[in-house]
Every structure is written in C-alpha cells, then in structure tokens.
Length: 299
Image (cartoon, rainbow, N blue to C red; front, side, top):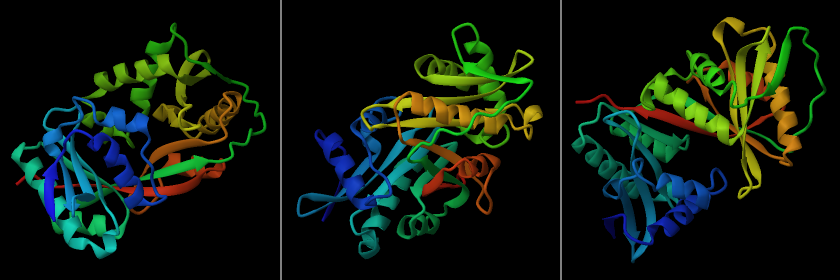
C-alpha cells in the first residue's frame, strides 16, 4: 500500500475511480474533468492517490479557488469506503497537510453527505457550514402558461447583458454571498456572469422594463442534459411570483432546446431549505444528492 501524487494518465483513471467509489450518487464526465484539471484551479502537487498492489483505491484533491489564498478539498473518494476507513483517514490527512503548508486564508472541504467522508473531515477539525442540494427535473414537463400583467420574460442579449449580470450579482444576497467571496468579489462574479450569459440561454424577467430577475439554461449535449443556473431575483422584488414565473420559463426553454433532463445545484441551510430549493421542489424537481460544505479555522 502506498500514497502517491498525480502523474500522467491519472486524468483518465481519476474519474473512473470517483465514479466507482460514489456509485450512482455522482458521475464525472470528460468535459467536467477537463475543466477541473486545468490551471489555475488545479495543481498536481495537491492531488493524492492511495494505491493497493499498484491499483488506485482512493483519491483526494486540493484545488485553488479564484480568491487569493483560498483552497477547496474535493473528491475524497475511496472504493468500499465503509470498510477502508484507514485509507479515508490517510487521504484526508495528506490533503490537510498540503493545504496548511499553503497558509490558507480560507480552507473548505466539499463532500457528498456520506458518513465516512463527513466524519473524516470532522475528526480533523472541519465544521459543517451549509448544504448544497442537487435537484433535477426528469423528464422536464412543460408547465402551463401564466399571465402576469406587469411582468415580461425574454432572453438576455448583448444590449442588456451588463444590466442582467449586475442583477445576478445583487440577487445573490444573502444566500450565495460566500460563493461571490470565493470567486474574488462582486466585480469578478459580474464578469463571469456576463460571460455565461453570452454563451448560454439566459432569461430576464422585467417589471416596467427594468430587469428584476434572471435564470439560465446551460446545454450539455455530451451529457444529454442541461444545467440550470437557478432563479435569482432582486431582494426587493421577491415574494411577488417573479421567481415562479422565471422557473416556468426556464422549463419551457429547456424543452424547446430538446432536453428532457435539467439539473441545478442549490444552497440549503444545515437545518432548513432556502427559498430557492423550495421553489425548485414545488415546480416538480426532486433531490438527487446532498453535499456538505465544511470549513476549518486557520491555526
């Protein structure tokens, strides 16, 4: 048995290992692996494999977040984890030692909410801070049309992408403020949002010609599904059925694009559902998996 770092060829064996270890809870596609193993997010020095008789049985990676000195431990995955707890422990310890050597301002762990992994992080001093739910619509059903006298929904175009991206940033409060900080701040997120809006189908909800909410459908033909950015509405316009109207419009757009499966990752509190999750479940989505975000105080 031995612990080793990342080497040539692991970009192919890594997703196979993760997919087997997580069974049907999560599957890594080639597209996602390419993005994940690209700089500046990826550093081969921070990726570890545990081998038995020359074959990898577990892995874990430390990734760079866009914000300076912020790191994320991800993909702690071990075959038959319940009967291989020493391997889970060894990989967690290696990832933590590497992370601490980088003197992090923020150190976060993301894991499927599965007992061996969560308990391993907690033994090393990580504390849960939030849940992320993966919710899917499958098959996507086209909802009935809804009339709203003051509200119109249309696609974001080059003429209003700047306004729409700023609405997205302002609408993240308070549920996704932590994510904006990890991405380097509000202006960094606005630029990122504008890029997404130019590349995918984003919808804008308007009240009296003012954009007050946005939602995006991102096609993934290689997976045979689309990702949903989620519904984002300005705080002062919430609880006015704007979110539900955008949700229905996004389901219609998904069907028009030819996809029968739509997937969103949405935030939840440790002991309750946030409004977005409630909206998605009421519109016919179902929870497929639950992730836990844990953080560790700098020593």
